[in-house]
Length: 426
Image 1: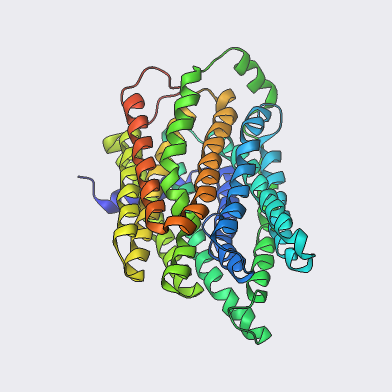
Image 2: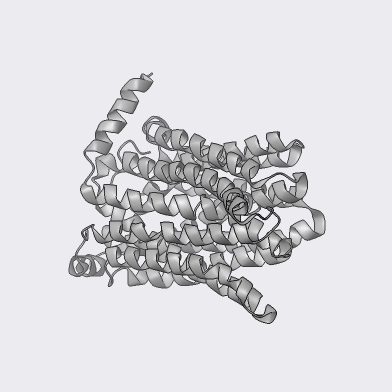
């Protein structure tokens, strides 16, 4: 077996030799992780909605609206990626995320009949920005790296988000108490959460300037020519969509409703919830960095399956365990297994096709992820209100298992679809 220090040294050396554009993009992604995907907003938003007096059903609608927006724009943006600079897409995404995030808390100052609409619309704007950023960023990163370093680069990319989310989760857990202390109000008041969300929007602004400092990786004319001379079997897009939709169901439902479960089911504090988010992100940094070595040993398809079934086990533990600390640790393990799966799965679907089709594939996977999040967030709110949290998490586990099985059944044997060979792949 390879010694861990040697592996870590190799990974570090690979990171040192990544291009300036890759590093800038990773820093911008870290800001997204710190603020939105697993960071401050993930910890705070649902708690803010609870303080506004909304129940699980409307919370489900708010989360589902963001996912629905991402779903509706995914495929058009994937096709637009051939004509529009990927760098420009990422810059636009950053500004749009900041706009949606900053505008959302103004709902408190609107007439009552407009409050719900405002929350839904601004949530959609924020997720529109995230979709634009991700659909531009995924092919940008793979185009800025060489095949031999991609597994490591995507492992770093997957690790940086959780590492930033670790800090964001801690900050998200502490900021409401900080603002409550300044204002002399309790944590049941909406003010501390509103001010935290405004602060989060400001944190996104530097990401725009980081992306602006990058250079475009593929000229648009080159991609148009390549696309005319190549094609991708439709079944590849269909299978990636279906397997991704199902595999992400469990993770999405846990990420969406973990804080609601801990707040409603165990009456835990924001700092308690934030600490488990931070622990999960800390673990996922290590598991993401482990992923390329597992890919070399077992292949990217098998590593994707390993991560998916690890998530299934974690979700079931969340329904079987009854102590808040035990449930929190099960959630932590789910985040860790998701980080093992994500870089392997991303490299796999991007290298199935030629560079010209990668924005379309990124749009397909974003469509898949958004559809999964929308479905689970929307149905989750009604499921919680009707039968509780356990059936919701168990359904997520079942769907994830089915998606992993579908992915393995088709992609376990190479069929010659790959646009490029995967270093240490199947």
